[in-house]
Amino acid sequence: MRKRGGATLAWGGRGKKPRRHGLPLFAFMTDAGRTPDPARVLGLLSPGTMVIFRHYDAPDRAVLGRRLAALARRLGLIFVVAGDRRLAHRLRADGLHLPDGMVRRRGRFAPQGDPWPVSAAAHDGPGLRRAVRAGVDLILLSPVFPTASHPGRPALGVRRLAALCHGTGVPVLALGGVAPATLGRVLAAGAAGVAGIGALPHLSRDPFGLRAARPRTVRSRRLAHGRDMV
Image (cartoon, rainbow, N blue to C red):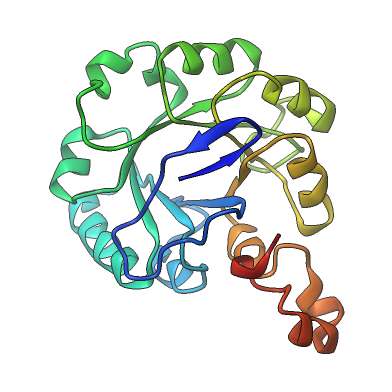
């Protein structure tokens, strides 16, 4: 458990290398189109990173999920299943993620008695407030910046992100277009961390882009890896 922005993060993985406390939380979201080989991506993530298993329409979703859940445990990752409570139970997941359309019916899709934290997607102020009322433990708010994942949808921007995070009482992960150059601003705005697809492996291991820019200095100061980030 850790606190950031007045809220508590309740997530913990089953792996042997848990995420160190006091660090921003990174969440990688699988995507059948953009990450056709999610196992390879998991191998690039830092221990303690959350993996939200989507691949909603995969014909072998249960088989793929079982393989990724086992891999996540070995790598010390937090494995979360999106949109399927039964599958989450079968895979002994660390949590359940609710797409925006499921949040209104949280009691049906994620009953309060389940033995794990629940995250939810939100795309604006009403969606965020809906997730808070549903009693979720973590909110993924998007898109913060323009992104290919949400073509045509207006970006919230850092100021709006800060306004929405303020007083929410639930940790918020910023999703959409976050890069090393903007990560500091996002965290300063009150986000508990960052979620993403394509950029997450890089952000997870080199959150501020220091490794590529200043390899010698980074090596001595141990700042390039997400586990050493303040």
